Length: 107
Image (cartoon, rainbow, N blue to C red; front, side):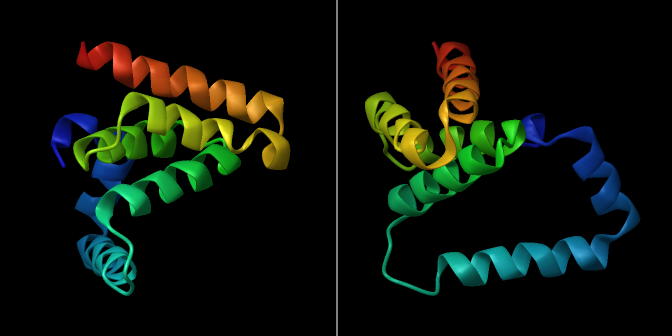
C-alpha cells in the first residue's frame, strides 16, 4: 500500500510505537492467510465491516484494495449496499459517498 493513502495519525502511531504497529500488521496478515477466501472477497468483506463501523478511512482503504484485487466498481457498490438493511441508510449512504470519492479519484 502506498504511503500516500496512510492517514497522518497512523503514521505518527507507527513512528512512536513501531513494535506495536509491526505486531498489528502481522496479525492482519495472519488473519488474511488463515482461510480459503481470495483477496477480492476478503477486501469486500472488510469493506462491509468498515461500512458498518462508519469508518471513512476503512471504507476508502478497502474500496481501493477491493478494486486492486480485481473487484469491479459495481461489486464494490453492491458490497456497500448490502449493509442497508442491517446497518441502516445513513451509514450506507455515507459509505457510498466515500466509495464514489475513491472511484472518481481513479478516473
